[in-house]
Image (cartoon, rainbow over all chains, first blue to last red; front, top):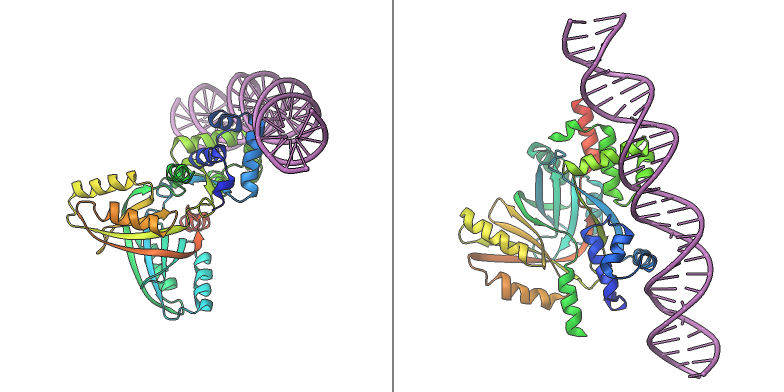
Length: 166
Length: 166
DNA sequence: GCGCTTGGGAAATAATATTGCGCAGCCGCT
DNA sequence: AGCGGCTGCGCAATATTATTTCCCAAGCGC
């Protein structure tokens, strides 16, 4: 963990920018308790180090017409590394697949997919995913409703953890 | 779908800000082909309408010490609405649970969790999740590696879809 | 104590956001 | 066709903000 190179101010900066990525630098500086120039330098450094990967607007996918969200559990015939990479590459090229994670256990991959409607997803499922070579099984689960969706890091847990170590 | 009230410029704005949420307004205006003032007005309107929910910095959770990511499939004893809501409320209060989605099928909920290490997750699992009233079964899957993680909307699919309708 | 390194702050400058205003195009109506 | 009224754009002026530059203070090894 590289977090030890970060002092409390850096962590505050990360937490604030995770919560509001468009906060102005002066506002950010005020909140973390330093003046604007060093604050901006810290932000730039965090970006350089890759601790901040980027900034994104969170758009309402439902309002935009993507009303269906599906988790797909995928099992492959062969788990050879070449086959795993090949499947991952396919996932990266499918726009409806927003996330792809390799898992342990009986299932090889979990995919989070979006689609405008059920039939769009069905056609993706039968036309793309199921016809992919080496795909042995796919179990899908429709998202009925979302209760929590906060990608990112729980900074309160991090702080608590560091205070115990220190 | 409210997307019909949005013209091509609005959708371009959303796409650009999803890709880079800290783009300056002048740069954004240049890319979508209008001048800065109307561009900013459009952005404000999109925020008002809730199409833009917010802006967030994407932080590297692994570098920050959250090296473990786990999907947990949760089944409940009772699926009465009160019980469902109660479980969702608990999830919202667990910092290690970053996402909680209600599913159809045999499993009631899928949770995406993060943790500093395996033992932290284990203690959350045995100490919190498994001891929660009404929780009947929990199956967990460790994420071995991530192949794609791009929350958001595939705007290329949206454009293609709208052009077919138009 | 001395010089080095590591941040922080003040002030100046450059860039950007934001507001106000006028103009052109597009209906719907007569 | 001609006439408001509406909508959205762009220009110009102003207010904020970002960014650079320079200088200062604290910590540290010698």
